[in-house]
Amino acid sequence: MLVEEEGSTYVADNDGDSDEARTLRPLQAAACTYRIAFGPRAGQKVLTVQGAMPRQAEFKQTLCADINGFSLHAAVEANCMHHRAVRLSWARLLKRLFELDLEHCPNCGGELKIIAATLEPPVIEKILTHLGLQARAPPRAPARGQALQTA
Image (cartoon, rainbow, N blue to C red; front, top):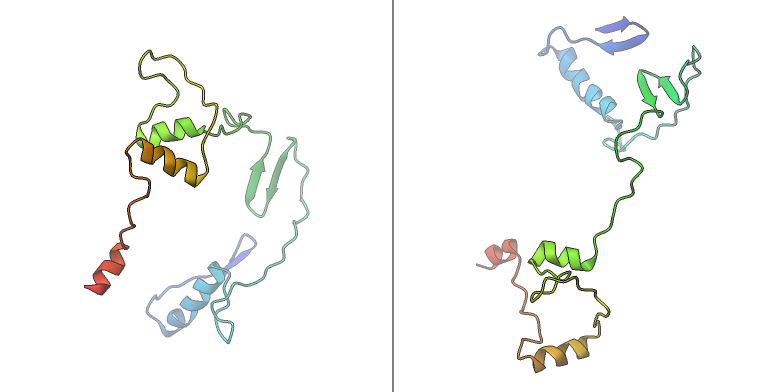
């Protein structure tokens, strides 16, 4: 049953188990998700081109809009909106992930400053070997799903 109310039309379902309701249910679901209901393109998104509806009345507040039941108040600002997100340094990321404090000296607690980073694999391997540490990463374990399939 189609119902018109305050400028909008919708389908009202009095009997949820009726043949009409079962027929309209997939159409309603497709319409709500902007998908094509039937045919060779069933399930694909519908291309919609919309334009702003003309305003019926002028707004008294600046930076405000009210269109199709949605309102935008661009003059309202939340606290801390003008602050940019701060990127964490590598030292802070390492501290967060591995509990390695590269910002403070382990002996005196003074502030440390990173002045260089070694990125070349042969140099890193030479340093690790000299320190008696493993120069190669351990082999990767198979993913959990793969281990179950081979068993």
